[in-house]
Length: 134
Image (cartoon, rainbow, N blue to C red; front, top):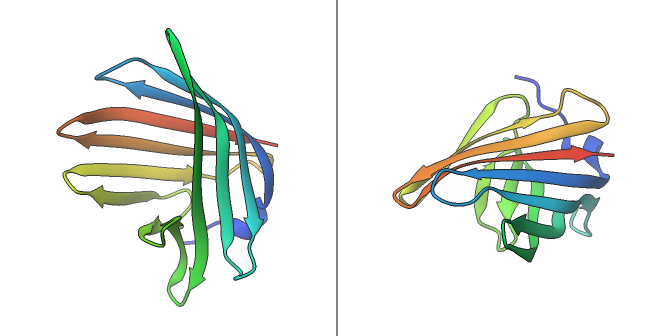
């Protein structure tokens, strides 16, 4: 299966995210997502923005890394733990304790891409859709 090379997505993207939480309020995030090469040849994937919901808001930030390995590209958390293989336009799964994250990175358009996660578990039940545009 062919996957978009993550280096093709380097740069700054406008981030728009919707979290449809079936156990709580709908939340929205607006901000930026930046993919840049670090000194180790990894891609640093940083997000910054503001999450809003009815009656509240909070700043958000997250850093992931995308690194090339013998078996392809992998997304890792900022502490080095594996998150999931970098596969685009195909499903990925990340088990996290009792929770299951089923996701997909769609890169069909040259000026936009999307990341969708369906998350289920004992205390989680939401769909998080992120749209990234130039």
